Amino acid sequence: MESSKSLRTATTRVVGVVSVVVVLVLLSANGAESRKQWVFDYFEYSAINCRAHSASLTDFGGVGDGITSNTKAFQAAIDHLSQFASDGGSQLFVPPGRWLTGSFNLTSHFTLYLHKDAVLLASQDENEWPVIDPLPSYGRGRDTQGGRYISLIFGTNLTDVVITGDNGTIDGQGTLWWTKFHKGVLKYTRPYLIEIMYSDNVQISSLTLLDSPSWNVHPVYSSNVLIQGLTITAPVTSPNTDGINPDSCTNTRIEDCYIVSGDDCIAVKSGWDEYGIAFGMPTKQLVIRRLTCISPFSATIALGSEMSGGIEDVRAEDILAINTESGVRIKTAVGRGGYVKDIYVRSMTMKTMKWAFWMTGNYGSHADNNYDPNALPVIQGINYRDMVAENVTMAARLEGIPGYPFTGICISNVTIGLAKKAKKVPWTCTDIAGISSGVVPQPCDLLPDQGLEKVVACNFPTDSLPIDTVEVQSCSYWGKYL
Image 1 (cartoon, rainbow, N blue to C red):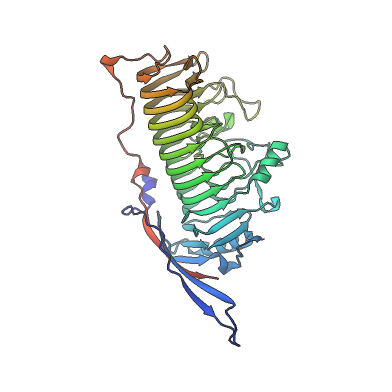
Image 2 (cartoon, rainbow, N blue to C red; image 1 turned 180 degrees about the vertical axis):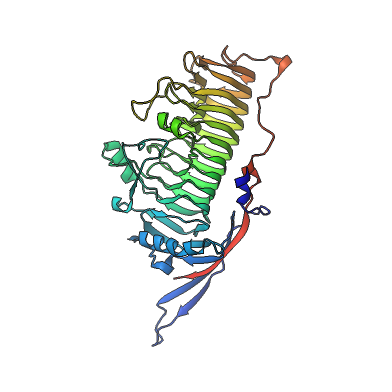
């Protein structure tokens, strides 16, 4: 892809943060004990681009006491640094502390960097969360009709933006929002922690995300997105706290993430019913690697259910699922339209699962009653191979749409160890078509085994996607803060 060339490439080098701290003690005129300390900090980090200009949040009045609102400080800092977009770009350093803030907007050619001891605390004051329009490919909010609260960290129409740190923390303090959701008193759809829209060349990496009000990371209508080294956790009973949701995005790489969630760890999306069909922007060229997922009530990787713009060319490998409802799940329904095709998953380990594989053609959950009942999704070219599972209640539940089967399903070299209290029938299959090879327990008749004389390895592409060529470089920061 030509657009991916705009990302600067260099030899990949993961550089641990190196901090050199020099404390200058400022003495009062009468020789009293020190009153204030300047801290000079130097560190290195990996990013798609480095920056020529830097500032600290404290330069703009930031106070990291966990009580004072820093919403204005964040926005003032970013507004100031935006002037350097055409002059080498800029970075904003968030020092150690607990930085209470409402939502703020990023700028282009910009890096937001969180110190390892920095915690962004999402404000509990709804007045610090402006309301914005629904996504055009959804037509309404996910929780309510109408608008939605803007995400904590938000950006739209950006080029070259990095959100990273030395495993600094973003705490969504989601309990307030979860309670309102359960009580049905939300005025608008809950905010996400990070949402980047209509943007190109995006990096989100080396952060810890806690207790998001809803989805954690949502790149949407964007391209060339690199997501690395995130730790995402929320109570497993928290509502809709999806980990990472690439949505109508092209050329995305997600790797080395650990997610504990109340919903899908990764949910691949592309719009909802007639709105997604009209918007017509698929998610494609998606790579997922080295993911660990714990989600007892949802999927490790879900495709849909909002997939009306289409999902294609998804490549997932080296996945570990623990105590999770399903390994890979395809969710769709009559009225969705769109397609899910050319899906490739291999080298997956599953431990204590309800289902290893789940496909649902009757998911429901429509945006409104204006969906087209003749808009039928196409599900084809689904490839699962080289997997091991243990303590599984049921191997697979594969349910297409009557009269419109899911086709081209291939499952090979998969061993599923059933739990002591497993279902008597390990596979249920309706309205699907495909093949299997070397699968235990033996799949249903709609996935006929090819036999020992014709061992089949399901497809997994050998070529590289453009996002695989994107590399990071070593960047540094040298500055002071109080």
